[in-house]
Image 1 (spheres, one colour):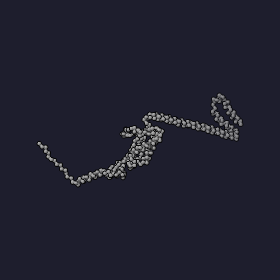
Image 2: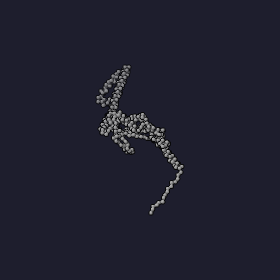
Image 3: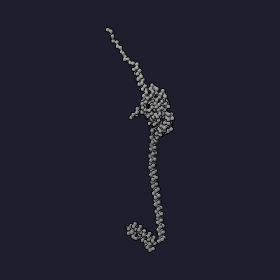
Image 4: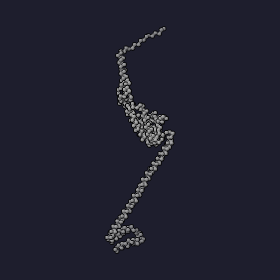
Length: 326
């Protein structure tokens, strides 16, 4: 039995050459349009190169460029806050950020201070790209250059400071000076970067000497605390003693003024009485007698008069009799 199958003939529809040309033209137009339109984000700027030569910078939005590789687009994040880390790397950002530290990164952060001590300084630089043209074309490999500039600036400023300044009281000053110097270098080399902030994350002595350094630091802090307490007590006692001394001086001056005024008053009164006595002796003596009686008798205790009799006031009575006889 022979296996004979009926022959099948496939006939393609006839397409006119005009339609094929239209399809080809349409595909070419779509390719050209797809390569001509581009979108720039809100945080970006577009750098257009024509045959490798810079021609223009475009702002955020929808734009056109020459297709087929005639004009090439490079997007630069000019409004984005960029960050560069030294001495560590962030492996996972979030609520609990994870960091990575390797021996190479530790060497990157290890530097010598001005008093010949070694510290491990980890820091972050936050920056923006303010000039995309300079950032792309002025210097080759800007990121590596900017990293080397950071290390050179921070090492130079730390090398001019003591270990106590770097670790404790001088960190903010060193960070500010490093930021200013780094910005000066960026402007000098025209790399198109604006340094916003330089922050020291952690500054410590190397791990092998950290326990000894902490003991010395604690001893210094204890010494400073005792000195501050002594100065505080000094500032309390000295003003208090000065106030007491001033009070005693003022009291003595007041007492001296009072005695002088009383003596001057008594002398003036005596001279006035003497002048009156010189003019009218009898009248003056009677007046003095009456004034003395009025002043003394109310103070005499009746019991004393009763016990001693009139002898206790006899001198006054005799004096009064002499006045009457006169």
